[in-house]
Image 1 (tube, rainbow, N blue to C red):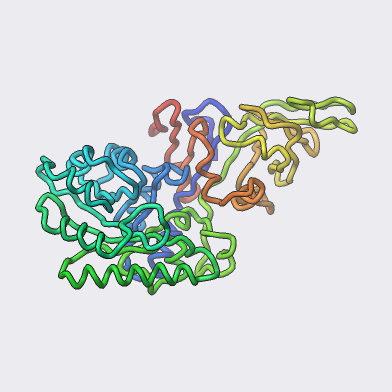
Image 2: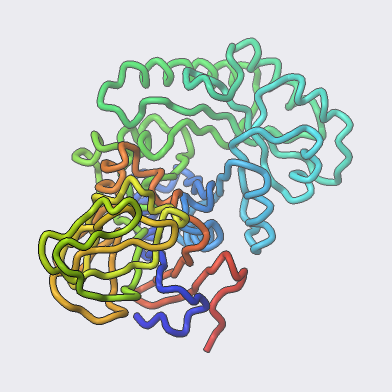
Length: 395
């Protein structure tokens, strides 16, 4: 793939395989069956992959609802031309409810006083609401069945509101031990039964994240919130060996050598002179640094060049780092930080392990100085450079 005509001027970029995103969703749809709606979670700029591009692909693959964390993210999708239903999973201020209603954006509600503060809502369209019940995550949600009942009745009785959904979130669905999961699930079943006893109809009932969808397909009610698995990543290391179908990683990170030189034995590299060569070595400079999310803690990691693993030498700088080359190579040679070259792969899970964190965090940490190049059927279909605020034009 030739990137020379792309609208960015620094040889570092992310490649996002929209083909893999599409296939991950299609595989989940086939696994769960057509009766289960897929809510595609595209919060946090689609976990660093690009919200608008992933949202469009998710819709093509059969997702019927999109989910974000904050109202701003939902409005950005509307501005980008997304017309499908969008659910805000986090808290929205009562005074901003009218904005959500005007843009047909569904909000999460779990507080009675929130409903009181929006009583004077002036809008031509009803506000779609999903009521959240806290079954044990202890983050957001109504805590008791009585509290949930009062909220549901208040929403049902107010013509300004439309009760669209009821949901909860599991804290341990990705862990092998299911004791806590089972407790949360039982509490949610009680909540669903209580709402049903009030003769309140709720179109969308959802409790499952990716882990739940992959492990407990019969415990989803009628929708699944597909987040991390949509991007081809396992919800946890423990689950990698029990996945019902292959997840195809969509995110890779690349750069090109900007400088190549030979250093002599005894010469040191980068800040603090933490690496000193014991013999003559070929060194390459890579234009990527901690300002882009490639943190200094990765200074002992490896990258791929010409299909070979080669180490980072010295401390990673703000915008660049240096690597040991196996031999003299040309300036402009591709360097892969995450992804595959020939028979070698550096996965997101490998980087997460090095940083003692989870795979969710890795694509999220790669900042907006790094353009996103979107690949579909091995062709570049779009380039998004957030700094310059424009995309690749048709040639």
